[in-house]
Amino acid sequence: RPKITVPKLQAMREAGEKIAMLTCYDASFASLLDRSGVDVLLIGDSLGNVVQGQTTTLPVTLADIAYHTACVARAQPRALIAADLPFGTYGTPADAFASSVEVMRAGAQMIKLEGGEWLAETVRFLVERSVPVCAHIGLTPQSVHAFGGFKVQGRTEEGASRLLRDARAMQDAGAQAVLLEAVPPAVAAAVTKAVAVPTIGIGAGVDCSGQVLVLHDMLGIFPGKPARFVKDFMAGAPSVGAAVEAYVKAVKDGSFPGLEHVF
Ligand code: KIV
Ligand code: NA
Image (cartoon, rainbow, N blue to C red; front, side, top):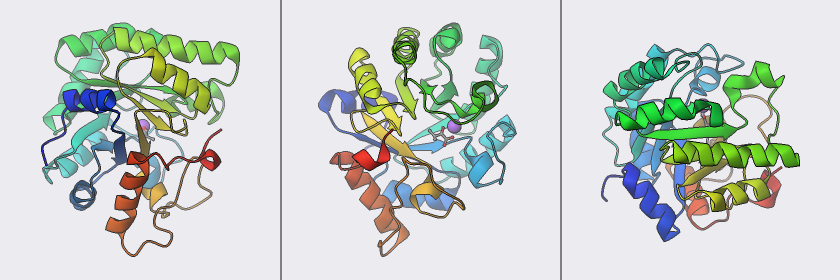
């Protein structure tokens, strides 16, 4: 199968083919996820939680992301490799560019950062310099202390219109994808309608152009109570590969997420 590229994600959105994305932090899982049909491997700063045992993503460094990106890239997946810019590494356009260069040198083909309208100048700066950008809006975990906890976003009318503004601003700045975390499904559907680029949801309902989950969550191996939007695909599956294939199939046919996974 051909390599997944940034333009291919756009083509998938236009063709109505759902994008299946999972987080991935090492070469063995990169091979397995790739064989199982995952379209995008995200080196998420969730590695702070699931690999390092931190309670937030804030301690994750650029070197951590670059290390895990290099591990994933060595598997030479057909899937697109996307990597998070960690907290504090994109405070200015110049910082954002230097950070992006570091993770792209490690093998990332797209970067993801958290923020809306206020980040437009930075996103434009990156895109002009050939850094493909996915803009993460809604519940942005790097803002946990600013929010006062991990809280669903866009629940009020004002919050919903802010999300629409953020998504449009990111698209207008050149972002090639928008990721929506923990927002009501109707708001995610409205955002998806309002922009032309692919939207990837996590806890955002089925009407996005694609879905993402944290690998350790969808395999049921992260300790503690999972978030509402998580489904354990390992439950009843004969192998890890089969669980990932079931996830990809459920994303592609629109059976995941169900109503029990939304806010
Ligand atoms: O870090 C991460 O895993 C993420 C996804 C949850 C979208 O940003
Ligand atoms: Na992240």
